[in-house]
Amino acid sequence: MPTGVDQKLELSRMIRERYSPIKREEKDSIVDGIEQFLKSAMSPRTPMHTILMDAAKLIHRNFEFQYVSIAVKDPVDEKFRYIVALGLTPSAEAAYKEIRYSHADLFDESVFPSTKVSTYTHFYMAEDAPYKPGEEKSYTRPSLLSMTRANSDDMLEGDYIDVFMQGYVRDITGYFELAGTRSGKLPSKTTIRWMELIASLLSTIEAHRGGWKA
Amino acid sequence: MTGRHTKDSQETKFLLEKYAPVSNTEDEQIIEVLDSLTLHTKMPGQSTAVFLNDVARAIYKAFGFKEVSIGAKDREGIFKCVAMVGFRDEVKTSRQKLSYTLAEMMDARAYPSTRVNKIVEIHLIDDMPLKEGGGDMYNRPSLIGKERPSPDSMVEGDYIEFSVLGPSDELLGWIEMSGPRDGKFPSRSTIKWLEFISTITAACLKLKEPTKERHAADTSVHVET
Image (cartoon, rainbow over the protein chains, first blue to last red):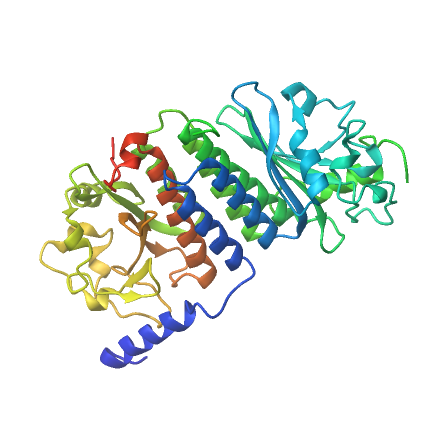
């Protein structure tokens, strides 16, 4: 065991090597992306629309989803409407932004059958046609809605995932809608956990700013 | 494959199994801890001191440090220790008496360290000889000065400090930890997670400020206990 000056040098070298920014891990870019998002979101001068758009971009860039949209509850009529959408064709995006759902609509299992995979996340399978008549327009490739699932792990064009933003008493204040993975496979559980954390951070921002309009 | 899925269908079972709430990986477990932290901070009227105690406890439990303390700036712009987990009562009392100005917080000569990046510094006891009466700040002062068993061993008196920075990189506070349960310096991955916790802490502290104060140029975090 070296002593004195040698030991201090060895310690400094060990610290620099161990914590070198060059040795990046898979999660690093996600953490960096969320940190950058929070830096902007914690400033009171950042408008809520920018925060929602930044959150959608964060997800679209760092995760495998091709389509990312965020809906929030309008404080005026208490209905959920889509504020930002990424990855969609202009016509699908326009159709999305026309949609309004009440809380009851959103959880009407006869119209939107789903599998609840956690407190925050519902999975909607294409075979269950989880959309209202006419809402096919909100899909980027509606002709693929009747695709068949070869494997349980496939993510189909018509599959989508809603991750709900919840307040302290589990009241729903908005949700992310995620669809289409670049690999064509279902996202990993870790990805879903990240989505839930980002949703939780967004709802924290909303709670402290007193609503989506603030 | 057509028709509506039932709860017994193969696909439904597959989804429930794939996304089962049990966290399988270390990353999933830590994300869960962070999720829980953000849920609590939504509680109406939760004080800053309670929130910082939650952060300290989360670090203590999830990352295996035996001592965690968190400091924040008060209304007068003085930095004080607000939350402590794992310290003896006498040490807590001594640490609660400490206060620093911003200049003192930034004084690298008084608190020499090896800087890892903008927010992480590692303070080694070798660089900070124990001052008279300084033993009151440590849980096991008799161990200070003992030989370091190996270069990657963290010994009594070593600590890791994370700056809690606001949107303009202004200092809002600090998170300090020591005494890893395995006796070793933490992995790079742990440091990355702790940096992330510092940023989440900064965001929550800023969001907890009353709107008027957040809009003002004042960048302090007002700690109500």
